[in-house]
Each structure stands twice: as C-alpha cells, then as structure tokens.
Length: 110
Image (cartoon, rainbow, N blue to C red; front, side):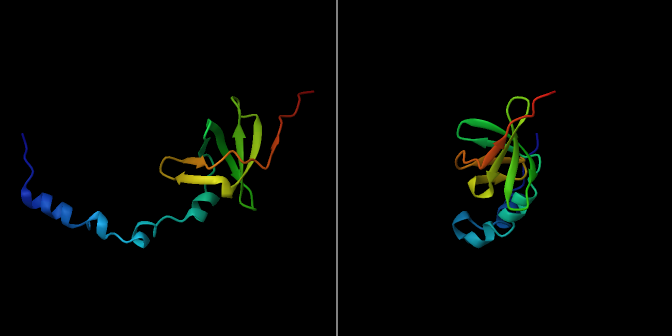
C-alpha cells in the first residue's frame, strides 16, 4: 500500500490558484471559437431533439454542411451562429436551436 507524501500534495495544489482567484480572461485565453468552427469537419452535431448528424465540411461563409439521417443521405446547412457549445476534445457540437438554412434531399437513382 502506498501513501502519498504531504509535501507532494502541497506541491500539486500549490501550482494552481484557487478557483475564486482565476480571472475569466485566463480561462478562455486558449479557446478560439472561430478556429474550432473552421476546423470541425467530422464532429458530431446534436440539438435539443438528439443527434442531428456529422459535419461534412465547413463552407467559406461560416455555414456547416451537416450530413443527417440514418444513412447520412440528407445534407443540412446550419449557420455557425446556431452553434451553442463546441467540445474539440470530444469532437462534438451542440446547437442552440435547430435553425437550418436549407437542405438537399438525396438524388433519386436512375
């Protein structure tokens, strides 16, 4: 059985300031929303109703092209302003609402 030394515990806790002393600018300084929105290809997209689909690509005007449906046959265009939360580590996006600019139905096979 190993016990942790009190000195090691003090050193570990001393490296971080208490939560009430962290300035808001320190917390968000490394997260750049615009960067992650521009690089979210392949991220899962969820809305209030559940899973919507996956980001296929990001268009130049800040619109996300999202593959939706069980087989990913529908292409939905979602404005970047509808994105509420981005979690890069989990490659996951949540939308504020289900605002969709347009959709493309799958082409019928001839």
